[in-house]
Amino acid sequence: MMNRSFLYVPALALGAACAFAAVIGTNIAARPLTEDRIATLPRAQQSAWREYLARSVLQMRTDRAALQAEMGRAGLSAPLIPPSASSAKSIPLDKPAEWYAGAEAQRIADIVVSFQTPAGGWSKNLNLTDHARRTGEHFAGDNSSPVPGVADFDASKDPKWEYVGTLDNDATTTEIRFLAKVAAATVGREKDAEAWRKSYLRGIEYILAAQYPNGGWPQIWPLQGGYHDAITFNDDAMTKAMEVLLDSADGRAEFAAVPAELRVRARSAITKGIETTLAAQVVVKGRRTVWGQQYDMLELEPVGARNYEPPSLSSGESASVMMFLMKMPQPSPAVLDAVRAAAEWLKRTAIYGKAFARGPNGRTLTLAAGAGPIWSRFYEIGSDRPIFGDRDKSIHDDVNEISPERRNGYSWYNAGPKAVLDQYAAWNASRP
Image 1 (cartoon, rainbow, N blue to C red):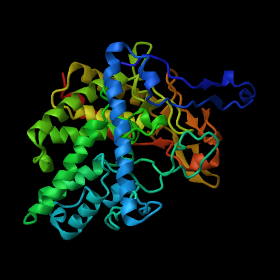
Image 2: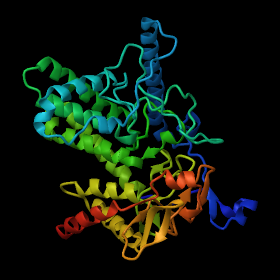
Image 3: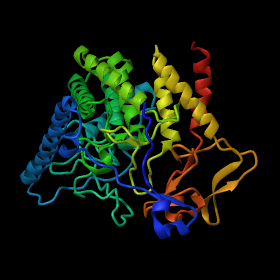
């Protein structure tokens, strides 16, 4: 269990910035995984991390070389850029079973396979219903920051190579599930079904390859650097990866074709992932709370991500972690304690009598009799007060004080934990 305070630069250290009452600190950049950082680990741990980093570097080179070779064959000086859209929305997982046996699902499945990276993952924000990937077409679209700022934590070292294989925005896990559904539903096209099956099995292998030695998952693999190297609960990246592995290990439904050897490795990865999840639960003054959006992969401390995403406790992601842990058929005492502590934290941080609603000045937090419960996206570790970031890296204690662009362009409050707490009540009642 994590029992250290998280870090941002407090307002008292900012000099003139203290004149603004709502500014409580400045977000600082998360550190990537590097050889120098690995060298600071206990000697017994260094070998596994060095091997992981070397594999990542080699895979990055392999992925880039594959695209470069295609461009050469097509006579291109620059890759073709695929159309953008929400990948997850373009490949639905909630259709009737018979739909996945139909021509449209099979057409999309072929497109999905074509955009799989050499590493076995998928990028995000692709339109996977438009066309099959062409020779020399990039695996990823334009994923650069839409509003780049000074010293933007989201700025890439190479804007032409971003999110080429990621768990962000439901990428990779959604493609795996979609292909598994189509392959399992297909009758009479065994050659095609086998191609889709091989593709989703490669996707499972990708998830296993991306897992850190300590059991966490980065947002992007091969590693891209910056906050993307952090262990990522944000957007449920880590929990959804473990859910795919859990279904694969059990051979559930459309995953019945997962080979026995891969099931064993998936089960082992889940065990490590749960261990890391439990260890990452933040402890304040001896009391378990919940989880942050992302963690330093070596120190397992909450870290910031984009300029406006400070290290903090995260309500939405923590509710998702609770849901995943409650799926364990025989939860250990440690899992029981973690879930119960998280539920108590969510109960005491719920906000009533306020609404984050759109008005003449955009979205603002206002008094609203009878409203709630809602939760702030971020809470300060230690005080549990809601906090909010801005593109200039400033951290505030009042959402109404941040810039209109960020106030209107980010999900600062949500009601999602309520549904989880409702399910928790029944789950807890059935446990010793």
